[in-house]
Image 1 (cartoon, rainbow, N blue to C red):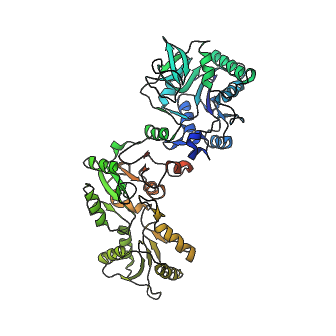
Image 2 (cartoon, one colour):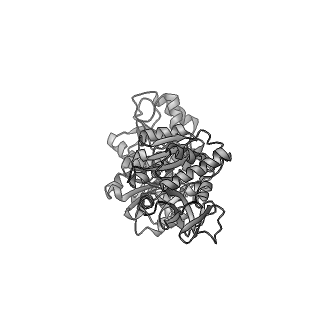
Image 3 (cartoon, rainbow, N blue to C red):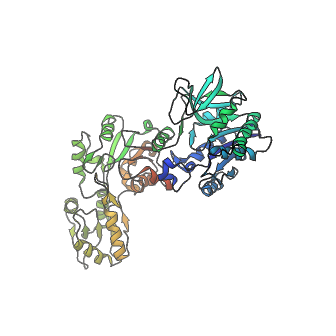
Length: 501
């Protein structure tokens, strides 16, 4: 790649239609398939042969965050800041970027900072014989996109108003211009801004004028992956298009139940259909932290949905908890749990007795108690003031999802006890502990397993701790905006297990 080439990424805008993300984050730093839009673009340019100092990002809204990101990840990439981003449009940012290149700008590549492109699109555009090109998804027509019209092989119009009958296809907001075209483009933008005082125009208005001055051809990218991120639907599309995830490579899916297969008492029909349709291709294990119900009840419930499974395929905190109590040979414990929980422990551990006496209590065991009383909390707190008494919990979920909304789970109970006693559990057995997947990992390689769930801090953390892929479904607790802070990165994000969008 010759040195006199500059890629300009226009990333000054706020993106108000994604306000749940962009209230606190510049749009170009919103993640698509686990990587920010800006990182996708920069890596595409670098993969096509440019080096960092050939890339220039025009910033505006939350420019400091973009600068910090570039300093940490791509320190050689240049920045030009449009401080008037709130009252101007991206033509001003483009003009500033072109002006910074001097009187001999060289060849330029221009892209809007809210698009993600397949690497091959950028590589092949740069390698194309003729430099003056607009990348076009030939045959595509989207109301919100700039459409391109042609006469022969020359582009004659680019605008959102180009009708379906005239449109060759949709522009993907990716341009390549020769040094002479770049010089002309700067003159056009400068005339609009400084002579006519027009500062609130799209760059495409200037590019439309450029079409009258020099021949520009379409660059056909049909069939290639690309997405412009304007709203949540676009984000869903991008997450799927650019996810580095191959379901066909998985032999085992470990599926969370509440929030993934059903929500409270309501089945999630698409997810159930997916499980039933793939039962002969993939081995399904079902995972729950909820110890207010016993594993056999989950088998019956799944069977009632038409899902064939058995106790061997139910993964629950009961399994590691019982193993722990057996290993420690505890005989007398205080159990903060409902009658179902206590009866299940008694059935598996016939020598175990329950006590609230400080003199003989060997451990405090806390579960999701759907029959919680203040008296139980009082007894647990008094026992926990003895720092020598082991303190264990079945899991750590803060809330339990229901069709009416989230309700307090064991994590909320544990928070109350911690405030009262200054103690947190010595051991938490359920997810995200990797031990929950021991049965599965003894049968399958880690790259053959994926965890499916609706929570980042339990399901996602479990997958991360166990070194397996995580499929996030948005059918339960987690919202797409919860991913804005980073941390857990799903391999793929779905509306639910059976439906992508």
